Each structure stands twice: as structure tokens, then as C-alpha cells.
Length: 165
Picture 1 (cartoon, one colour):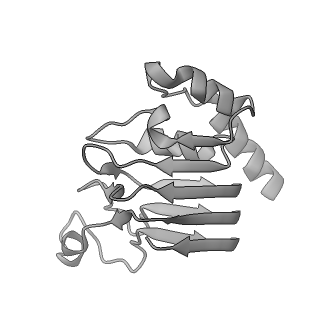
Picture 2: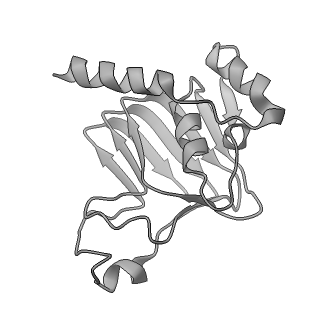
Picture 3: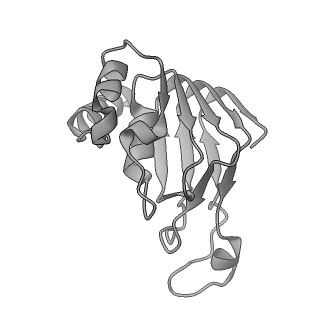
């Protein structure tokens, strides 16, 4: 079963379009060829309204280190699932922030960043992960009660280090 799930995930990931910024397409290509091991997340783009696709692509790339730079505003995202990733360092520049996009976490199990079946991942730096607790506490038809809304969730993973975030 694990082989089928992983194979299906890799097939979908291989078909995902590259969302690289025009100015950084060659750098993204070098990462995918295994020539660059350190990358900046903004090479895949930055959308002040929703940067989910850029961060997903950066985390799924062959980079061993992804730097989250401080941008003109937060990296607003919908849920990001990181599955079967190994040997990754995510470093936040000082003041960099990944923030839950308001209204996008209505599912009872929506987490901002979920690491599942991952190994040897280090997340660190002087940045921030932010969700909107007051939105989720005010239960409405939009937000059902849930104990699973986390900024960072780690499931079935090992050797995960989170420092200074």
C-alpha cells in the first residue's frame, strides 16, 4: 500500500507545473537537475494573496535547504502537505512569516504545514508561523470545532528539529 501511495504522489508531483518566477527559472531548473542544493522559496514565486503553490514547489524540490525570505508581506498559504520528504532544512530569514490565509482552514483537519512520513528535517530561523486562533474559536457554519488546526503538524516522521520559530 505504501508503494502505491508514494508512486501516486510522485506521479502527481512530476506533473505539477513549475511556478518559478521568470527571473529565477534557470535557478529552479538547476535545483531540479541536482546542481544547486540551497534555494530561496521566492525563486518559485511570491504571491501576496496566496503563495501556497510556490512553497509547495520549493519544499517538493530537490533542494536540501530552502530559505524563506522576508518579503513585502507574509507568505499567505492554504494547507501545505509535505509527504515522504527527507534531508531538508527550512530556514526562515529574520522577520519572514508564513501565515494562514483567512477563510482557507475550514476543514476539521486543516493544518498550515503538515509533515507526514518525513525524515531528517530541520526548521529554524528568526521567522514566524501564524494562524488565526480567534477565527477558529468563533464556531460558525464555516468553522467546525476541531483540535487539529495547527501551524505545524508532524505525523509518522522522525528526526525532525524545530528551533527558534
